[in-house]
Image (cartoon, rainbow, N blue to C red; front, side, top):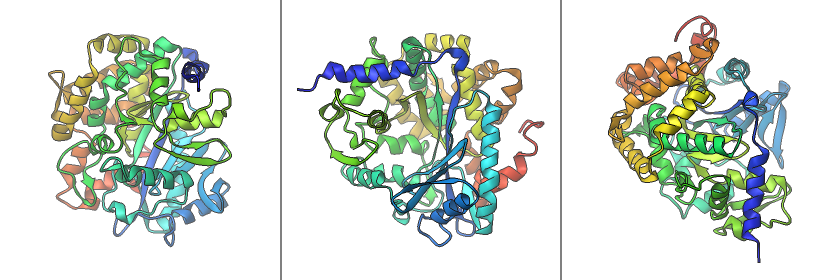
Length: 444
């Protein structure tokens, strides 16, 4: 019989091994995008003529190293950056090594844009940062030829009503933060989880769903709530007195991993739980790290704490998100203040607020306070927690929230003019022309 306590210890030891001294704290990011046709705004698929595969090949010809599965190119890397594809060909950019300074992330991202935008322009294509595809429907997307995604697609057929929308139609912005100890981990994990409904609402950038206006709000939250309750939403033990590394390990062990990746081969495991599969006496590092990626809660623990509630946002708003989290979580006074404020919060309250934001968005309430007002307080705190030379990065978010708006409402304001006009601010081909040369000196 498998030793359950030994299984828990494997994960606990792994989390402990990832602790970092505060002076070494850095931030990791993932920016997901859609590639669309300029005329129709429809999705560009992997196999299309001038499709996503062709774009990867063109970047490879410029010196990027191709990442292949069999004969299929599914990603790219260079010395500092990685490009990967999500199931519906969403184009994801990340940085190999997390950075301490936001300006370092900005530099890497602009370098990426300056390489890919000219390629897309020649093909009459846009790079778009939105939470859900503005035109195409899920039947219009082909799953890319990645074995893991095909297993997941089959598994999710028997799960939530919107699991396939999650895989093919969404694009996210994810931020990863470090922790110094189990106590620091608990503080950060609980704060981020408690703020989940607020974060969904502030960074809601999904005005369109399946080609039509999404009349409600916070589509990302709605889709995740209807994906697979075994592995999404708030980890229900988060606010338990004994929450920590071991409790998160138990959450992992009692979830089906769908598939196991040993580093050499992928094995489909269906509805078997991790605890029924993981051999504590014989496992690989790749297997362990893969298992941690096969759950999708709002806040996920890996080598770091991954914050997963934000919709994809265009430059420079994407940098505001990084500034927001850095100012809140890497400033000890802010961290302690927020932790004190959330002491009495229960998981049921968070889940109720998540339901309300789907109906009312930024103007829903959480613990008797309007979410837009909570957002203003958080942005002010984050601003206070930043070094003076990084405050400029939070200006786009500050301006938006102080005007009582979020990305959803910015798009809605322009929707009467036309769909392309409404999402113009999310098209990176346009954003880089407008913002890259002015971001250093101008408050956007």
